[in-house]
Length: 246
Image 1 (cartoon, helix red, strand yellow):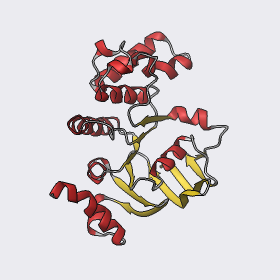
Image 2: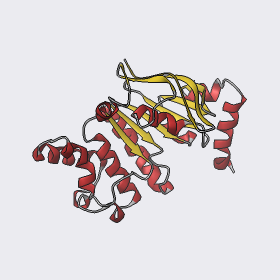
Image 3: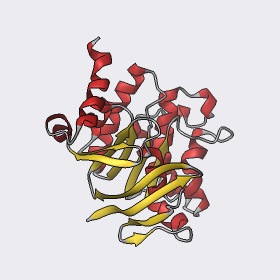
Image 4: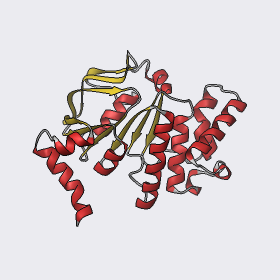
C-alpha cells in the first residue's frame, strides 16, 4: 500500500517556483528521505504532505484520500510532524506540549498519562523533566519532546523536517542512532527532510534527491552512489564527501 501519492503537484510563491510538477510515491512502512540543496523544494514538499500548503496544481493523496483544506485537519491526526528545533510552545511544559492534542480531543487522563510514560521510555526522556518548560531543556531534550508529541496519537506516518539540523554534532549523532531504532521498532512510514547525505544514507530505505523543485533521482543510496542518472548527482555526493576528506 502507498501511504502518499503526489500526482503532478506544483507550487509557486510569487515569482519563485518552489516545485515543478512532480510525481512521488511513498510506500508504507519505509523511510523515505528528501534531500537536496537549500531552496530545492524539499521542505515545501513535506509541508504539502502534512496539508499545511496546498499545491497550485495536482493532488496529494494520503491513504487513498486526496488532501484538501476541508479534510486536512482530520487527516493530520494520522500524521506526526516534527520540525527543526522542535517547534514547542514556550509557555507550555514538556508534558503539556506532548499531550496538547490528546487533551483537545478529550482523551481520558489515565489514557494520556499511560501514553506519556510509554513515550518517555521509548524516547529516553527523563520523567522528572516533563514539568519543565522548553527553555529549561537541552536541544536534544526538546527534540525528544517534539517526537513524543508527534507520536502521542499513534499516527500512521511520521514526517520530520530537518529534525536534527540545529543540534550539536555529538548530540545529533546520538539522536540519529536513537531515532533509527525508534523507526525500526515502531515499523511506521517515515518521511524525513535533510540536507546531509550521510544522514540520508543512515536513515533512508528510499532517497529522493531534488534540484530546483524537481526530482533528479530516486532510489537507494547504492543507486545514487553507483548508478547516478547525471553529473549533478555525482557533484552533490562529492560536495558532501569533501568536508570529511579534508
